[in-house]
Length: 116
Image 1 (cartoon, rainbow, N blue to C red):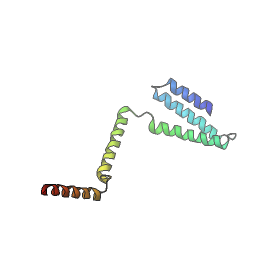
Image 2 (cartoon, rainbow, N blue to C red):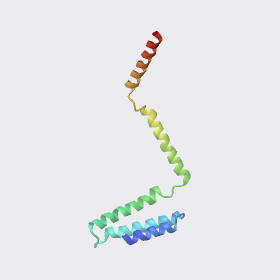
Image 3 (cartoon, helix red, strand yellow):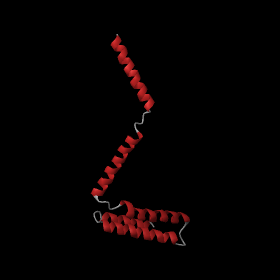
Image 4 (tube, rainbow, N blue to C red):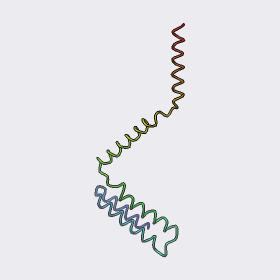
């Protein structure tokens, strides 16, 4: 397993800009890790680690890697919009009673100052 990870890291360092080669390295590492999962001579610890590596590499190639820059920017702006919409829908974090009470107190103070 360590040797497969080492080859994966070397492949990544040699192919910084080639996304297809990186995906191929991820698939190879996932396959080698899966071979350790089903191996009869592997311990339970090694099988668990290999299973985690297999799933991480599969998820990495399917979900996160290789998003084009414009797509990443669209996702980021969509997240920002979602946060803004949540603030609008859920309102301010301060309870409405306190802000209303403060407005009433401030109005009373202004009225008292005018009378003096």
